[in-house]
Length: 50
Image 1: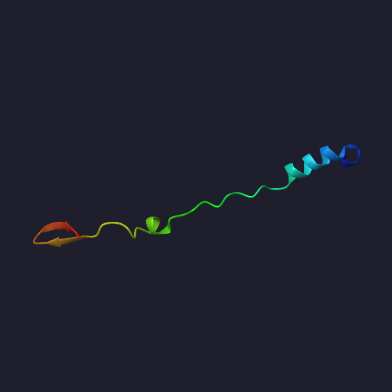
Image 2 (image 1 turned 90 degrees about the horizontal axis):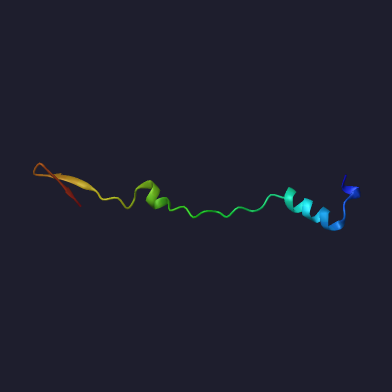
């Protein structure tokens, strides 16, 4: 099949076959793991934010 195609068509096929690089997404691991969350403590029966 490839023998009957022109050079341009062969290049187009190679572009389709080759997987394109995906952008790596930035992951905010600190936010996912909960490092920036408020901490609450119990003081005299009330719950207060630290």
